[in-house]
Amino acid sequence: MQTNVLEYLERGALARCPDGVAARSDDSTCTYRELADWARSCAADLCQRVSATRQPIAVYLPKHWQVIVADLGILYSGNCYSNLDVNSPPQRMRAILDNLQPAAVITSADLLPKLVALGFPLERLVTLAEIQSVAAAIPAEASAAALANRRASALDTDPVCIINTSGSTGIPKSVAMNHRNVIDFIDWTLETFTFGPRDVFGSLSPFYFDIYTLELYVALATGASISIIPDSLAPFPAKLVEHLAKNHVTFLFWVPSVMVNIANMGLLDKFDLSALTRVFFAGEVFPTRQFNLWRRALPQAQFVNLYGPIEITVDCTYYIIDREFADNEPLPIGIPCRNTEILILDANDRPAGAGQTGELCVRGSSLAMGYWNNPERTAAAFVQNPLNTAYPEMIYRTGDLASWNERGEIMFAGRKDYQIKHMGYRIELGEIETAVTSIGEISAGCVVYNAEQKEITLFYSSENDLSPGEIRKRLAPALPGYMLPRVFHRLDVMPLNPNGKIDRHHLHQRLNRRDSRTNTVSAHSHGPLTSDPSPARGEGNSGAKSAGK
Image (tube, rainbow, N blue to C red):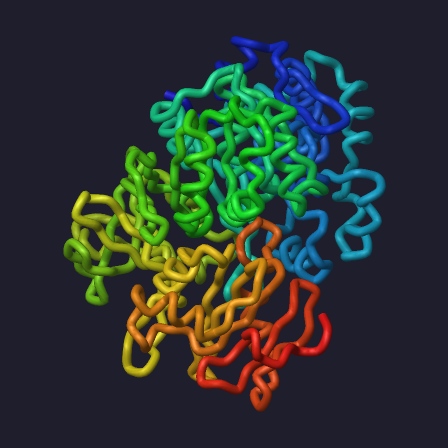
């Protein structure tokens, strides 16, 4: 039985194709043999620097294959890695480091001053160059013995990585996952889908995001190559698609917002993407109209919709899209992954009936260890299964709403905190968004609720202006009157967070900065906002435009 994620490398790519390209950045590549050698050298140095095991060691480096070297080196040393965002604001980074209290931080010479400025102890900072220099002086026998000792004491319940994500309180959450969590998910992936050494992964998500977990360990197990897409390309859809074609990418695992932009710009027919045979997407709802553009452009590709918060180790449900969907028909999130059970619980913590919406909860080996250094938050989210009173059994309460459809598939219905009470009705904002994105002229949309003004507000992007009256007319066949947005704001581009998802928090902030008397929002570089004093307020062909950006 596999007990350590390093076995994916040792029994997989290193044994079968050691000279195959493990990862490629713009300026260089590394083979699996080089990856393993450098990782073990890194571990030998870390064993001398960090006497303890099962401790977090942070990696503060730009997205590059050297991050993979550092992560594997940390694992060989018997510790767990936490990849950090080098572009994170100082206050947020300080909060993350204060919570993690890492035994060391691996960085580069040019980034080291930023960490010193945050007050992190200099003696716990180490650059990759220092590690390579020190490791070269350690006798091979001593290095091998140190790593063997660390490995001998390791268990599959030891932490493997910590992923830092947004917290509703403003303080980031640090989700800890162990070897068993990751192995459970990766084994399901390998059993359900076929990957091999000829696959090329188009890696767009940051390495501090959970998609990296699937990309890394599936590649280590199969010998696939990770083509690391530079962060500088992320804002430019045409350059992203060009990268896929140039590098003969066969597999993507992206968030839908990026894919929506590519579809809206008509880029799928302008490049040769015939090598692309499998496309995963997760993280947010993929508007079906734009999904259908991808599916029509890539008939050779298998498309898979995955769902799951970080707390259950990447994803817990999947739907291999095997039938046609109308542009206004939402995609299912499918069925549970192997060794996972999905519970949809009503307000009384009883199983919801077919078609009844309830909170999606998860049980199984995929459940993360909890939140690092935060037992109170862990206890609130990872709770005793209310359907089992016989023995201790944890489930994770996602805060997401879902239902079972007539085919036995799970349908995502939005967030509990996106469910609003308006005019006496309970409304799912996600249902409104699905209807909005089925309008041909609208490329993306996000609905937020202004509780103070009791207004449903639509932010949308489109090439041309649409009057509020026209949008409401187009939505009327799909939505009852009480669900129609009342305030409309057209943006040139929807704001995205660092993970590539629509930044709802930013849009809420824009509402909060609004002058309630004129219904204007403060200017921002993402695009113009407008106001209109008519009953359906917002930008229209006759509406008064707000001044400037």
